[in-house]
Amino acid sequence: DQQVKQNSPSLSVQEGRISILNCDYTNSMFDYFLWYKKYPAEGPTFLISISSIKDKNEDGRFTVFLNKSAKHLSLHIVPSQPGDSAVYFCAASDGGGTSYGKLTFGQGTILTVHP
Amino acid sequence: EAGVAQSPRYKIIEKRQSVAFWCNPISGHATLYWYQQILGQGPKLLIQFQNNGVVDDSQLPKDRFSAERLKGVDSTLKIQPAKLEDSAVYLCASSWGSGGDTQYFGPGTRLTVL
Image (cartoon, rainbow over all chains, first blue to last red):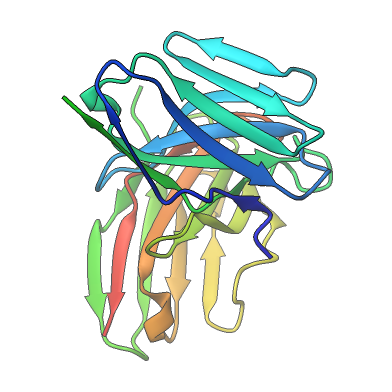
């Protein structure tokens, strides 16, 4: 039962262009969403988050969009840089309701930014 | 501020052997998590501690996996006996509280079971 899905295993973009990573979820109890970035041989690093009361959150080059009716969120990176090349994980939780903030992760998308 | 520390970084064992992983969370963080990440998948929560009490171990295979967090600081995760399908990266994370608090991850321990 995959409650959080990242259907694109990989994405390749040119430096300076926009990267768009997508994530879908099925559990309507999820109300808090996060994106983590992971480099090889390192643990995931928190990137950006969004609460279900918002539909957009921006932090520098990174913007997360949430479409609750479609149960879909996306991460936009503009402009993309070679250092952004990593695995990106989408995660969701019910914000500490009955699950004490347990995170459910997607499978990850490998982003490669070419110089 | 020091991050989450884990050891060892790599471990190779044969099936049916035992193995233990250690985690030292960020100082002051009350909540500690152990995740299992199988190749090609996202991290899956095994167990969550709030201080030294367990708040979620619903996905921990309790017939072979055990974890403890003595004194509400360091934690150990043990597998006994290991199976081939336990080959994965075991990640430890910590946060100030639970709920929506950001989780900070350690580098992980890569376990290979032969």
